[in-house]
Length: 249
Image (tube, rainbow, N blue to C red):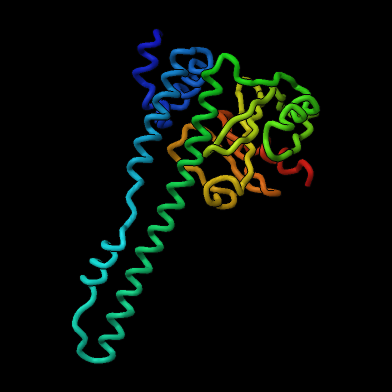
């Protein structure tokens, strides 16, 4: 199958809508084909830009005033006025609450989308890591002086995971660590950032938008935000996340 035929299904693949067998075949092809992996990265970034553009609207003060004016009516009796006032206040609270949760959801989706983009860029790169080593005692010191925090790496003995290396990355202009792990034929990325340096604060154990084509786990501990993402099975992603959560516990 030529690359032209692979790229015809690229959009469906990124939306996770191909049958399981085709998804596995496409995953293997993308990891070994630079043109297709580059096309996948470009399309992911384009999708993310379109999604972000569609989430920029938030109700303005003038919009809230129009809603309040449409609910309110000239006062007649005290109880009616109180009821209408309570209704208007409730409507404003609903609008404010909806705006808050929409903003939080939008920011969370954007953060996870950027993490997915970083992972895809790694798959597309001919040199995915800057420090190549399976030894955590070599990889961890490499980050000293390059990022404004320190972290611990788990012991992988008696596990199915192996460390390939790491590199420095940015999320929302915040520097962080990107570790690459191998589990069987899958590459899994672990990203670590300072939680306080990210815009706002992601919710604990943030849920991931279902449209992402990867398994993802995220949590916050000790002032650091962790992301584990890859095309491996959910049990593998959870297994690597558990190893990190147990480190230094």
